Length: 128
Image (cartoon, rainbow, N blue to C red; front, side):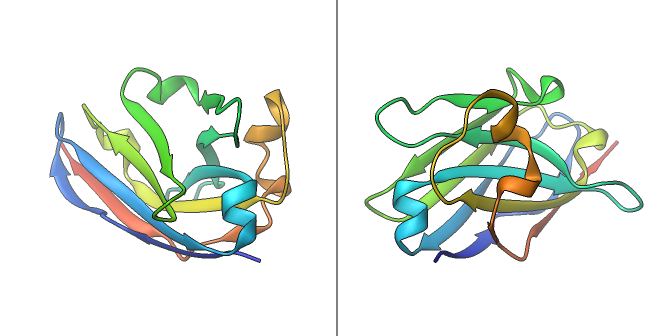
């Protein structure tokens, strides 16, 4: 099981930065894959970033956030982060963290259907 609580969202101007945090508990977090997804009003929930478990710690990003967003995890403190720089209005959405029980690779790590545990989300709004 995993219990996830996101925080760190807010209102920023274009070009600004935010760091989202996801406080996690449960064995699934420490041994599984962690990911961030987002959902804008009227749109499907979409993949943002994922980080696999040890020892590989492979990262995956959607193309539009590469070079701007960084996902990281602190297993000792049970926290996943999403560092977001150079934010754009198109990044405005409700951001969710999620966990896969076990492993994934490639396309699988981007598939929201594999993520079993989800937080409630934190709102990010980027003004133009």
